[in-house]
Image 1 (cartoon, rainbow, N blue to C red):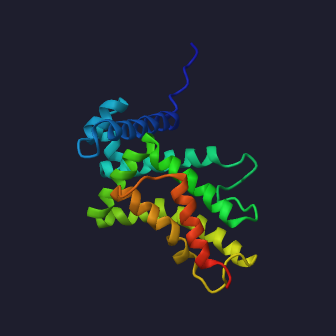
Image 2 (cartoon, rainbow, N blue to C red; image 1 turned 120 degrees about the vertical axis):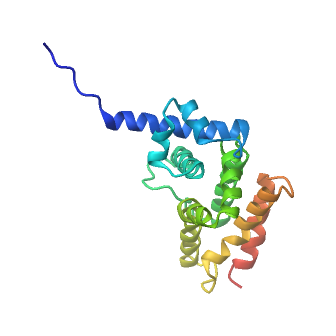
Length: 207
């Protein structure tokens, strides 16, 4: 008798994890974060809720990891094939590079796949300080460091004053966009982010 190979638990776990990611993102988009539950995610993913609790302590952590995975897929799709690590391209034109990446950010913020989970994570991070620290450390800060590295490169080429702090400088265009998106104080457009870059670089350029 030919013995059947044992089930591959690694593949089974990865399949379940992927189903849970998809279920969490879909439910938040359909019913909102408040009405999304671990039980609902489990039912949608076709797994037991104990499977979810074995990997994550709450729906917030499930959603964060699902969103990180989605963002990674988006970044990989946006990066050139020859680029080993995702980052802000350096074409030698700082303004063009920043405008390009902010336009991609606009696309992401307005994409229904991203908007609902983004808003849910932002809101939960405001009311839950411990979870908010996770969002900053695992999601926001790695993205902001891409801007830091690009601005540091611009300092080396003389496009940006050597005395500025890149981590503070990036907030001149990133923070207004985030504030407008969170509070819905105005439209999120390419023209808006292009203008943010123009205004910011006017203050960062060598005098």
